[in-house]
Length: 114
Image (cartoon, rainbow, N blue to C red; front, side):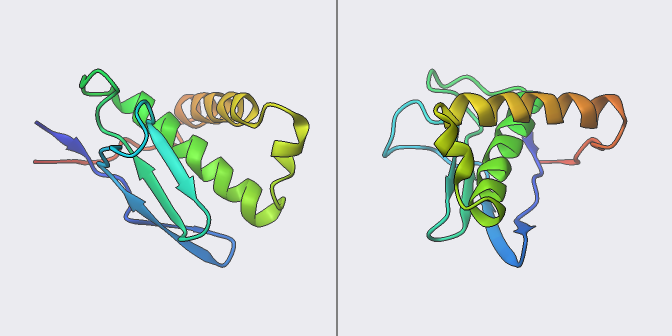
């Protein structure tokens, strides 16, 4: 199975976040990604809750989603969560950001490794 090559570390502000991909969520069923601000880690699943390999754009969107959580935590001190439905807001922002990056050619295809 070919795996996407995601960055191992992402900086948000002065903070480095470790990116763990692929991550198999055993502790919480149904998660596709998770941002942990306490240990500065972003975890991304390669397969969905049914065991199906996820499409590259879905994985990129999940990565952007979790990066937006990190940005909210670092720069906004969690204020997006004060708006009511944090997950829907973050997910909509991730969809929009992914579309812009893809359409403008700013998101270069990431290499694949065996």
